[in-house]
Image 1 (tube, rainbow, N blue to C red):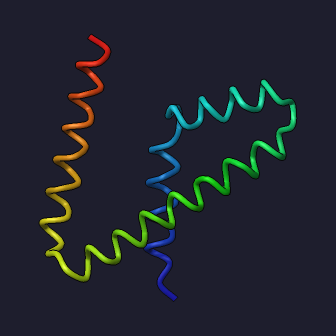
Image 2 (image 1 turned 60 degrees about the vertical axis):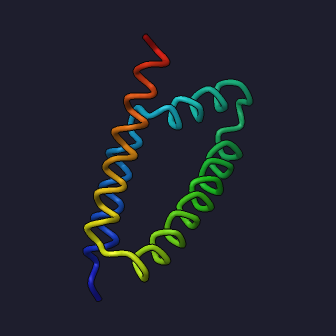
Image 3 (image 1 turned 60 degrees about the horizontal axis):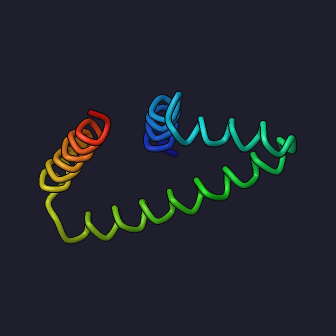
Length: 90
């Protein structure tokens, strides 16, 4: 069994989410409700659903679009979102 997709996705998401606004929101929810297991369950379910949507879209896009086009589009969207966030802060 090839574990490369599992491990690379795990490491990528782990590093990407550390200190992210999602983690800060979970910290705030946990502090507010004092029910850490319920907050953890809610966060896991939300991430599961969001990731499932991403996998479905990625699978469909991969079936119809060239891999390089997907990479370029994803990179462009990250840059556009970053610029928009910077303009909103400034």
